[in-house]
Length: 275
Image (cartoon, rainbow, N blue to C red; front, side, top):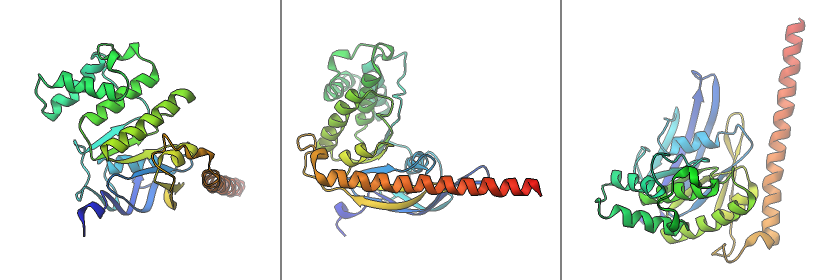
């Protein structure tokens, strides 16, 4: 098979439990991510989106099944980069220093690191803030630095855990556009966790819908809109509305079913106590 057609991430019947097996977080998770593909993970709270991202990154082991990233078991390293909801910058280093730190770990020479750091900051619109410190930046600017730092290692896979959730609407809109442009230029695979259905449909080529308790794949939806989406905004298309309504409907059904199950469990608990 052509290597370009082989999945860059492959999950087969993956399961994960916590608290010595008492809490079942994920069960029978199977899907692939192709090279250069943008995939979003969505679903109600408690469906294991962040846990799944940590499994893909090799931060925690799976209890069952198989996960392959670049054809091998996942381990944190330069081919895998992760952006969190908070930027997690080192406050004692300047903006450029935060990026140069990663470049040093990558082995780039001392004379090249400042130039490379400023080029990356230019890519996210922060070249003029290279000498600033994290506390001097807004939340949105800090997230841009976090994104530039992740890109500094030139990853083949970029994992993003609700990176825009804490930002205001205008900043989110700007960063979504910048992310799409960076993704298109660099050709990396992106796995993006979000609670925002509109965001998932806007950014992704595929959306993986997870069910909660335990987390399972409910559906995988192909998203086919004209590219590039920062120029051809799909939110005005009838197909966009239909897709978001379908995904919201699935979540509504899951939440309703979950509430009914919890109500039944509570009722049986009351009966047990009464007896």
